[in-house]
Amino acid sequence: MRPAAASGSEHPDLAVAVGEVVGHIHETIGGEPDLALVLVDGPRATDLSSAARSVHALLRPRQLVAACGPLIATGGRLLGPGALVAAAIRHDGLVGLDVSLEAPVGERLTASSNILAVSTGDEAVSDPRLILSSVFGSPIRPIVVDETGTASSPDSVAVGFPAAVASVAKGTGWIDVGPPAIATSAAGTRLTTLDGVPVRSLLIDRLQLDDPEAEGGSERLPMLRICRVDETGSRFMPVESVGGPSDGVRLTGPVSEGDLLQLQRHDPEAAVAELVRDVRRLDHRSPSAILVSSTLEAVVLDSLTTKLYGAASGSAIVGMFDPVDGAAAADSGSTARSPDPWPRVDALIILPEQ
Image (cartoon, rainbow, N blue to C red):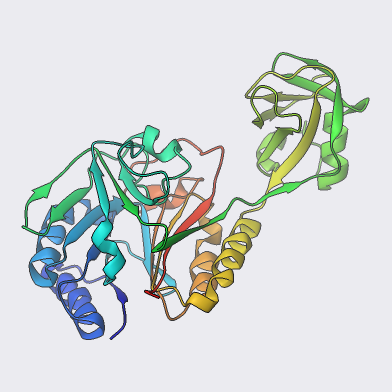
């Protein structure tokens, strides 16, 4: 019997959808798993509590966590709108699950734990240890149901996995653009020249762009940031806008003349490749399940789900996606959010018992 299973349904009738996903899980790993995860997308948000209780009644897991996100996926593809996903994991090591309610950053969790987190607040999502998070600004609270069937709906929940049970893989997609350079003209949040060369000229040359000063030009730029190599002050500063040759670029943080800086651009496909490489490194362990969270642009989500499934097709894979561009989230009926300056993809990988 396999240690984990996942299934999704797009059936509009909740009872039918629950029956489809639970039926597949029962056939694969049986009932009474150690952990169950239930996900719904925006159009199905009002079904979250009912879905959680129904899945719990049929599967009888020791712990169940349910959450709502803009886009969800399983089986190597995006689902929805109106989708339901359930996953279940059977693992002796999960007896040590450390569940923390109303603690967005998992204060009670041990430092060695890998963490699955769901939260309605920005604080939890900003903690780099937290892997799976609900849509920013969502009014939908996660649902937690324990082995007695008692349900709660906290602002946030963090579940800590022992280090022997889980591993974390990440993809950020930040790529250096040219070598580091010295800020030779800078004031406050405005950076004008690097090594005596106008930053605007460097952008045009190194990124092979049209004139960024043209109407709407800044919108054509890829996501950019400045990395402070000496790590004094704010280490990473997103580029907010690009002006003319004498204006340079405006950053989100201050920069001083003499600072050693590295220009970086964001490539979402590179983030996907980073994550897949990390997952492939664990291939010898044949992961039982992979729980994926992403704020990458919507255009790469199909690629992400397909490539991840190709790298670990024997794993139960589920994903919750909150695209940085917000377009897909708006289309799905979820609350849109502000652009994330650090789009990324994270995966919590549940490893088999040894």
